[in-house]
Image (cartoon, rainbow, N blue to C red; front, top):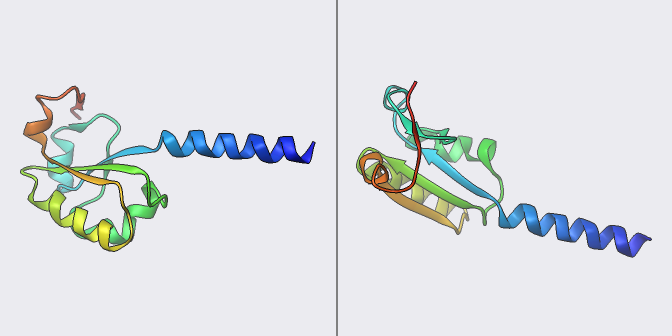
Length: 107
């Protein structure tokens, strides 16, 4: 019975890990409120080190960063990589995302 329980925990853990994907908007609050990727967390780029664990502490989770042009997302990417996050992507500016299959929300 114990072996079955351990096996189930391992399988469930792998499924959660495989599905971990996050979008983070690193723009200002005002920019975020004008529209953002549906479901995206909002963490300004200069606060990413302090607030990333509120989104995920899993350093292998897939994290998409975006801002207005890609510059601030690039800065946030570097910070997260320096912290040991190894699956972080700079998806550029929000206008680039409008051409993707990403749904934008407007407040």
